[in-house]
Image (tube, rainbow, N blue to C red; front, side, top):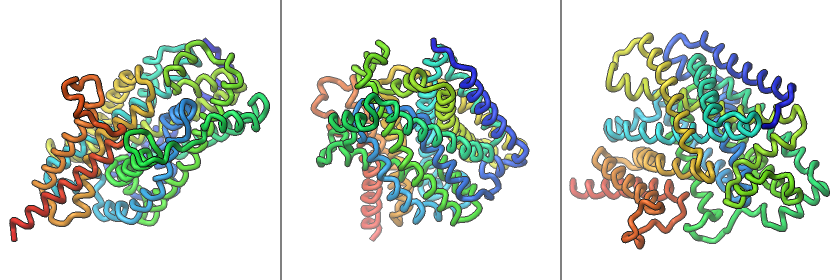
Length: 500
């Protein structure tokens, strides 16, 4: 076990105490359910944009992106390059649409368009997606703390989940957004510090870093071949485009932030702020992973035996935490651990608040007590935050044996979110698409998603081997979205012709 110096402990304690106190302080602002879920619709765009950015980054980016770049190359950056296009579509179509609706739930309009089943389907897909995200975030945060303190990973996960759930429960969306903003600044500072220090620590200097990385093609964005069976540039770009359209278009975490902004213009500003900040910061994370590859290529004796074995098995998520713990000077280690905390807590708090919001608006008020008063609503919001905090923590336990948490998160996100985006686009862009068209589209889209996911796993029967999905797993969200959209369009066209 590595002993953490007193100054690093001080940095961590100050950061954690400050974050929890800041988030919890906003309990004084939560006089109603509207305050808890939409912050009185009064926040500036730059503040909401920092929250959007913080939600995007998380410890998935902070630890998994360097790990991915260490093992492979800059192929994941294709995901970031899709953001400007997705942001433009969002500002042009999605933000005005939701601002006109004025309903804090991202899925209320689906009920009016396709019936209550569509709303419930979207709710379930969102909750499953973000339970997986919360689990990945907590697990990745537990890794460096496990190496640093020697504590059991499970105990660390429980501690992280409890702290974040506590201040999210008290502070509501006000507390979430303000702590997101502070945490985003800490995260960026930590990433830049490490990116500057790494080349300076390189044996032979920065020139040697670039020589080793270039020799191994570590800056490559991947193959540009028009193949959908491998993780090519185009596969990751398409995955990023559809995922980011889903984030901006149908993700409760993002849509809810549109309603916290004081005007349409400020809401649009928040989208551009979050998207354009994430692009360079994700490049910094990939740069760190590439620099770590060169550093340990030149100094392999610094790696532990276990880490060498993990790298040989294609597991890179532990490399950056190992470097933070064993290679950085006193004080900087505490800053980097605080930055990892910042990314994780920002994402967790956002997801918890949004899940609690849906619990109230789309389940309790929709099916249990439509006329619920403020007192009952606040009780449900508090209970919902606690419930989803427990579920997210339990999910983190289940991710302890995966090879790459980034790949696992991307795949689960594609499985759960593709149908919702397709249904939203169907309702937004196809006039006359009704309940039957939506139901048929979702049913077929779900079957396609399950086939694509299951046929690439050991559970798939050997006699059905010729019917395995030949495409890369990142194509799941692309195919699922297009299937729902195209099936819905065909059903609508057939119905029109029958009516003529």
